[in-house]
Length: 470
Ligand code: BGP
Image (cartoon, rainbow, N blue to C red; front, side, top):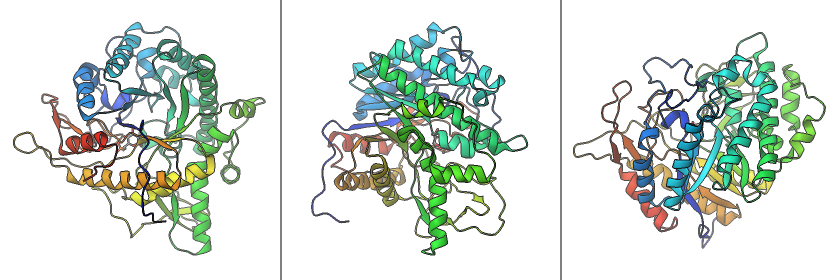
């Protein structure tokens, strides 16, 4: 749909950007922090570990100052569970509380709204050793952790996100260093873990409403429209299958408190439907999120797959589909260009995704990740000409404006990432930030912060409330 005149971004729109604790903080074993699954995960050859990353833990004041200079209205970051509770449960680490209090206060001193993810891929290793999300005790551990967060930060944080990209942890956990695919029927284990995470999330949302009546809380999956490779009805059905398995399973449970019926049939067919105990569905139903946060990088295109194609996940990751015999298979979309790292670029798909979520759930939406990973080049005189990133973000913001005109209740946009950090599985050479961090994969150099061209561009975007995009 075209319009003669577009609606403006709301006056109090939350322009900002995102990071996650294990990818940006470093200080992996400092001040009483416990080990997380990321600290013990294997790194693909040639990529950095997560020990130092961008050393935000020691640079946060300098970094927040840069965010303020860009004019951020919000900063979405995650709290490392293991800084707060080194063993996942038990003793609270005062130094961890102190760090996040300092960070939140620093943000608030510049009127930057903290948007806090409670758990971003970094489950405490102590809990993992006891079975991780396979163990129902982890549900209680998460609820207890969320209580500690609400007690300590609930008076200052208005926006809470529960679990980052739970859907990607289930679909691509091996790549993200979160949940593996071992055992006889790995899918059975994974979807049981998924059920436990859904319960943990629902309990945290309920607790948030009880303990912090002024705060808002929502889920934070990675959602993208799924296209059929052709107009062949079987391809359209395959797209619907994949969308239910990838997207709606997670949001239907979080928002509507029920299992998506196609996703449930898929799990039954694979013999991996979770065991649901008495009272579980009531817990899911009572959660009532205030908004939906979601991450968007690309769309997916799939085709019918009636032959017995193998379940090839070797090249798949968050944004690259795989195949499931009799359900769908990933297809190339020849209408779209790709990033240097092989992810399709689809700004119009962003508008479409926003509309789909809006129509299904009718809740306010916030985008908590969107961005372009690239090999940035530091040129003479501390210059980074990342025009490709500006182009990517501009096109997505244009589509966000169109979606708002379509009626989507979008209240914030926090692209990935505020500052360069270490990618989930492709090292620090895959850069996303508005601020360059001077380090290589294994040479930490001076970790100097350098403003990229996109830094200045985004500053203008924010000060014009999304009107000045060129
Ligand atoms: C999302 C994750 C982030 C982030 C981003 C980019 O799936 O929530 O943690 O890293 O993707 O992905 P990558 O680092 O793999 O390029």
